[in-house]
View 1 (cartoon, one colour):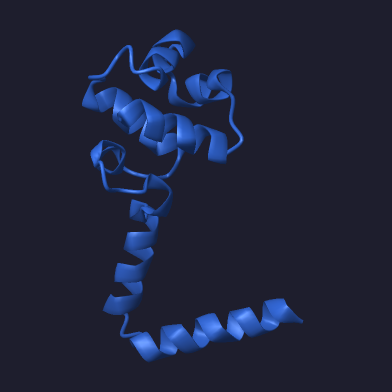
View 2: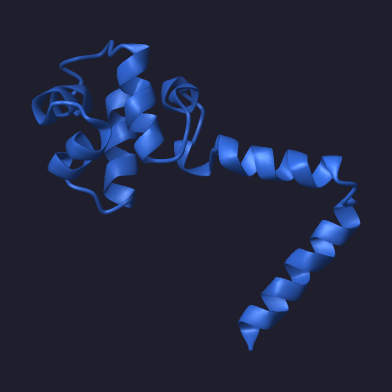
Length: 106
């Protein structure tokens, strides 16, 4: 259920209902009713606002088999596309990631 996915995301981000409501610009009572599955059909605009707070998509909130915490936000997709367009090969990117892991381990 969509309400359960939203609540799970909110708790994973350590966010209260009040904080989510303020960040999304949606009434706290409305978000609460979604999470409790009293409101089972929120508008796409509401879902987009909530998804934006969690850097995910409304689509990922709607999909039953989707984990919205693993969705790639559009900014990351744009960065990846820019890297591809600039000619960075997969191997170069993987080497960079490995190098960063090595640096962080020190």
